[in-house]
Amino acid sequence: MGLIVESEDNDVVLVPPTNFSMVDEGVYRSALPQPSNFGFLQTLNLRSIIYLCPEPYPEENLEFLRSQNIQLLQFGIEGKTEPFVPIPKDTIMAALRVLIDVRNHPVLIHCKSGKHRTGCLVGCVRKFQNWCLSSVFEEYQRFAGVKSRATDMRFIETFDILCLRQCLYSIIYQYHGYGSRKRRLLNREENLKKPQITSI
Image 1: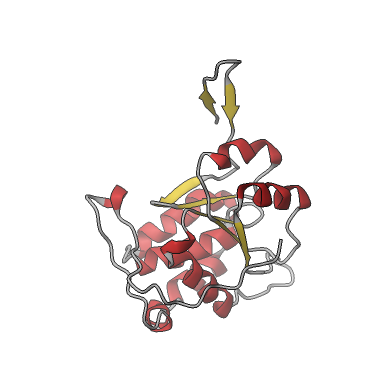
Image 2: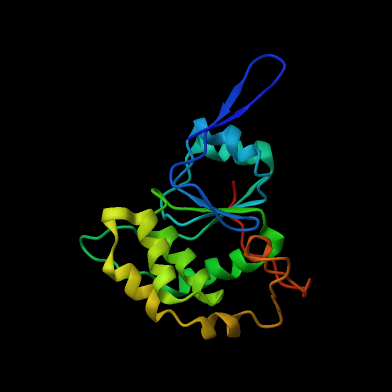
């Protein structure tokens, strides 16, 4: 899938990363972007990237972030299935706090393949948005495909969104707009301490 943009010299094909999709207004998800995706990412005018892997970010990607003044926010979550490593609730919670803060938008969430770790984070966001569990699982499975993990879905199912709301402290978010395509989380408190930014 690609987007063709006409220019004076020649047509430019913009290629989105694998598993790319819009989650909400100003929030996107994907697999780890490749250099061939950088042109497409420029069109999103990203302010932040939430990276859910423990491995160092690729140097070529770091150079792209520097050139575009995009902040990298890394939350290292192991992606191994053997031996099984439980999803760290505290890490997901920390990533959610950053994700919900619209001052970090537009934001791209990604892990390596854009399936499991990204799917868990987005699934928790959907619960926060009051999606029914069957719809949350359907979205998770659409991206994970045959590699869907019961442990991920169990984590999403048991994730306590009340805990997230309590952790927001003085931040109040609400939906606004006209229909689901225009819904957005608003931040009414501007004195929130800035999230830790990974040095790039």
